[in-house]
Length: 73
Image (tube, rainbow, N blue to C red):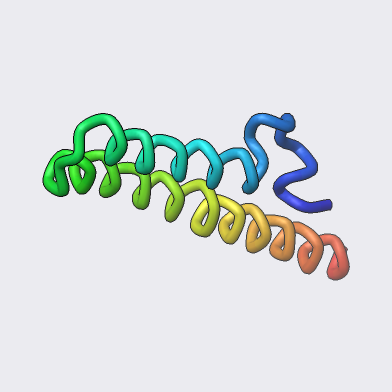
């Protein structure tokens, strides 16, 4: 089972990406400041790294460890 199968619709990769893109674009459209948009962008990129790459990878590794442990029992 995939990590994303456990998550609601609003916590799927497409919704995470869409929210981040809207926040970055909205920041630029409202503020027209490269520095303030960068200030908004950095935490969003970290959020994407955490929730789109690291957490699913850790979940998959955890599942693989459980499955390999079950094979030896």
